Length: 368
Image 1 (tube, one colour):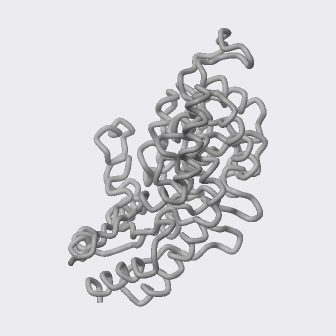
Image 2 (tube, one colour):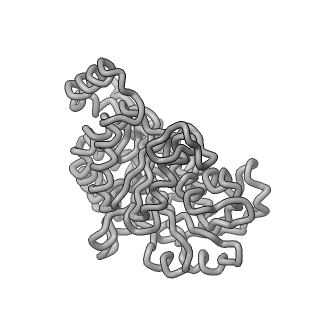
Image 3 (spheres, helix red, strand yellow):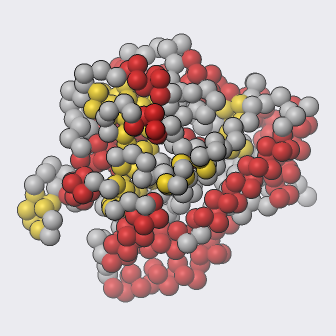
């Protein structure tokens, strides 16, 4: 009998571990009728802020709106420019555009695939009000160099829960850290969710107001800003509290898989993600190899029962909806090369050693 295909990520493997506590939590919240802005959310915010090493965490509806509200809380809006990359999920750029500011897309460092700080510096202009640094695939971006640019740096940490740079965790490295808790993230809810973490008291207060119709502190009927409905609900917060207890061990398992891939694939004709820098610790949200004839290799893996992924096949500046930014093919060469060659291999908590071996053996048959 043929083996079931090995998915890029297996969410079902988490449920037996969570079932008993999760069901009890659902029943408790349902019995209390407390679904919004309640004790579970406050408790998760306190725990997530402590984990990230910041004074504040503000739960919001998703990771996209986390970036948008962080920027709006800093006063970013029409007429401003915000620098970021095109080699990211489109949500990063959407969040900037949602403020009314213009995204300015720059190239990546071909080795790390994070933002190239020299390219960011070259793009600085009189209207530059912020930089959004994407910690891509779970690897911290070069925050020291970006911090020297002289404008607020917002961390898109949607793929980097628990990653570190020096003694500090991602989220505490810039003006604010923005997280997604989409189910496949290193810390994932059972639906959408997000958070903004920061040490800036005024920014935290602004984001809390913006997520809840622009309400004033302690007075939901007094609206001091033009906000919206962007809250993290109590059910998702409660699930995140349960899963936060396992985040570090889950990240260690991801690192174990990444290390085994590096050892087993080192002699094959493909580029592997770089090792951690001495002062940094990646969390391998994705394990992305650089492969010639990527689409052929991916199709061959599928035939072998391995469901590899592609992140991201078309960079944002070449997407039809973003042609108005004025960039063309060839303008961001490192980004375009990465998009054409990136192949994501299965890497998830609870992945078995024999499953890792299936991936390695399939790649050896295809590439050797």
